[in-house]
Amino acid sequence: METTNNTTGQEPKNLDIDTGHSLSAWDLVKLSLRVFRTKPTRTLLTVLGMSVGIGTVVFLVSLGYGLQYILIGNLMTSEDSLMTLEAAYPSESGKGITPDKMNEISQRTAVDAVSPVTEFSGELSAAGGAPGIIPIIRVVRPSYFKFSGITPNLGDTFNDTIPGAILSAQALKLLGLTADVSMIGEEVTGKVSYPILSTGGNEDVLISKLKIIGIITDETEPPIAFIPYSAVAREPTVLKSLLIKVHNVGFVETLRDKLETEGFLISAKIDLVNQARKITNAITVVLMVFGTAALVVSAIGMFNTMIVGFLERIYEVGVMKSLGATDGDVRNLFLMESFLIGFLGGASGIILGIGSGAIINLIMSTLSQNLGSKALTLFITPTWLILATLALSSCIGLIAGYWPARNASKLSPREAFVRK
Image (tube, rainbow, N blue to C red; front, side):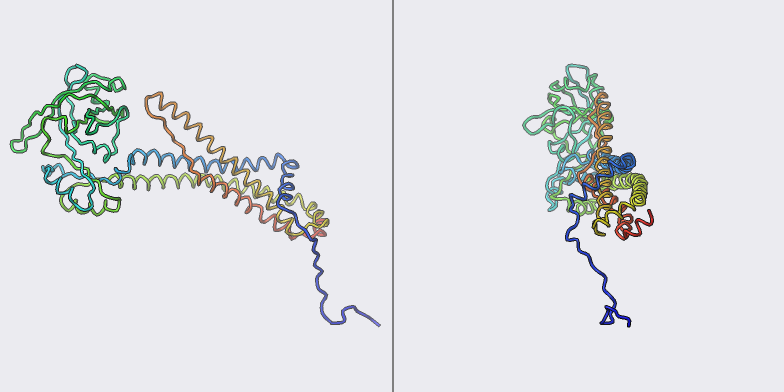
């Protein structure tokens, strides 16, 4: 008579084996590092491939941020200049801004302060030399420099207690002088020609003796001299434009629209900054796309390496499972290996990208300073890019190792030995 142990008529249950332990994170790291000893060439080449891709991304994005810093940094010279509008009547209108109109604008709610700007031709002489014709002489108040963002490269700006003159390099050339620090302290005198609106003629107004306290060394600037109001014998009655500083950035558009309806032409530095930021952001995105293409190629190479590594280690997986390793241990081991390769590739890629940018910065700064200009920083790497790149490279490693890890965890010892 046939007997059976299944007296209840139910199917036998699978036997669950609990080993009571699993590999710790430190165990996984130590086992994962074996790949650098057993397959050093392949592993190092995979890390190198990742580092080249990551380094390309860091290098190109840093270039984009450097260009943004250079462009916007030249425009955004001060916080006050971002909250300043320049208002002027169109040249074809033949109108000039009167002091009464300036006072009326300064009383408006949104306006914090107003700085008048005048522009005339005149004659200056410096260091006891022959007089020269300066096509642009601006008679301005000290607040002009804060609102316009213009600052001399050598020396300083004048103020209410310390008057002085600021000349551009081209203006000094017209006077037969050089634009270097030796000119600071030289005395300047001359006259400026005020227009007479009623007759259409000009009136010469004397400029009292001043010392040069600032020099604009930029050769692209036109011949221009800045003179304080206190240095002219008579204050100008016709203004070329007004620098209008508002209380905060939120008032810029409202005041601009209001002044445009009154016939003014308005320019605001914040508009230039916003446009420049859009352009540089677009450039950075394009550079990032090119860098990402190199990164994708590196990621494909890493994925291929992980698959080959799995196929070569099928027998090893079978041995591990025979000795009690769980499916989770095997999966985590493969994921840890791919994570470490991705992380190390990202770290070395960041070093490669930042190092390449630093070398170019050094070369460009040296050349720029030898030519008499300021040091040039062409590559800037923000902190968030470094952290994001490390996270991205680690994720790429995990993604590349997911399929081999999944297949290895599902592999039974019997199947592993048969396939071997």
